[in-house]
Length: 121
Image 1 (tube, rainbow, N blue to C red):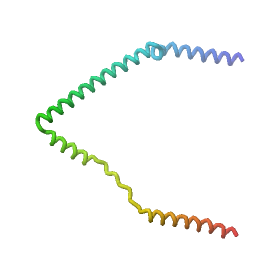
Image 2: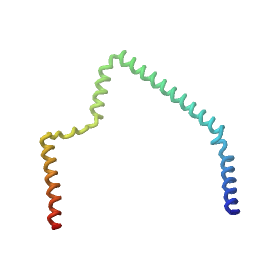
Image 3: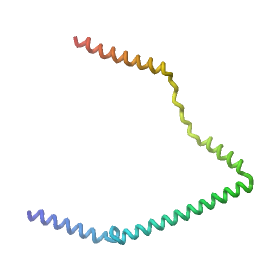
Image 4: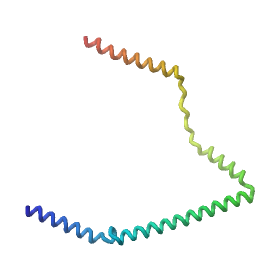
């Protein structure tokens, strides 16, 4: 019993030391630092988004002023065709063929089930 109590005391001391060492990271200071970091990153992301929106607006104005919109649309369509993923269409099978295939499988299953019965006799 005394050995268990000593081990428990050592574990508690280890945990208390770990909490003291990591209080700045996991305690109120760490939480505040985390929120400050996140707020800073959100502000940076908002600034980047605003800059991107401004560039898109400039591009739109340029295309309209130089009457290049038709060329731009043709360019985009060409790129989309080049980058399009070819998805194979499923092979169409008539309902009649499916029905015939189903009957064949049922007949084969019936024959296989009958064969072992004959060998058992």
